[in-house]
Image (cartoon, rainbow, N blue to C red; front, side, top):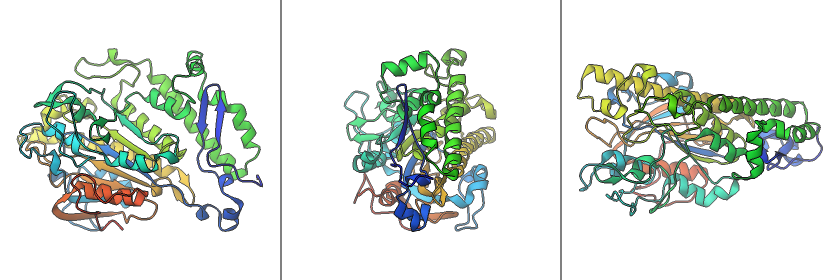
Length: 447
């Protein structure tokens, strides 16, 4: 084993390529190893916000009994394996998604208010306005600690212009992240572009284009550097490096397989940008895998991910729903509609279970990557039939570096601002904020 510590920012380099590395024992200072190894060096905390559109059918979602003995409702059942890593919330409200005198447009306001807690300005023009979002507040303060200040992901093609909902700009439905009140941060929908952001020295480097044209893999480009590093590592680190590089190669191969499937093979009523998977589940899971890689390599510690735009008419044929999601969400309490909403809610929760399992599978220090994460999952709508914005379907996965007591259902006083949860996460993340949007204080009861 090496007698000198390797820098935490060590990367493997090749033709137009940079491959960041996971935390290795050899990156610990010798003093830390002598004091107890992995436990002597705290792992960074990560924070992710996952948004699902069009609310949920709440009787199938919200548990009845508080505490550790809460029951897994039909919508929560996919998380059965991970219930001890999850908090279910009740009573949280996104007030600024309500009309508050502005009339229709609940879907647009939901997207714009979810992470900001600000009332989106009712306009279909370029003078849109919301507020600083929780993820970007963290990125402003701590984003300089990683190569990418934050990562913004989505599944549906971004639209930043036009009228999408009752006089509201499309930017609100398609954006979670706001750098300030007037500056939305567009998400990336193409997994290949995300991959290149993580592993390319320069996104538009001509050498990167040459590498792609020659179909050379990232690992082929850096293998000589990897061999040199491998000679400096002990047995445990060699195994960890091999597992990590194998995972990167497997992900790149999956990207290569799905790239030829462009939007031309999809039905006309489903928008997909060229270069992303035709299969929705594969698309979501590729994005989840990329998020895990970004966190594992400390390329970024902040991510916002829209699993669908607000007001989405995505069809979920894989679970028997041939109608558009938004249309079916106005269920009118019809049994057949409720069953389809349940199927969509369960599908989305199944993707959260996939992400949770991936984070849990990565060893970091004495625990796992999941232990050092806070993954908030939910919507700014509860019952979509009535466009309710109170008692939201919200869960938090991960222990935030040991600062969160999971495995519970916690119910708060009605009308508790959702942004109080964001303040609690920001506090644990190390970002300073006395107030964000309509917050009234840091949400208590998480530890």
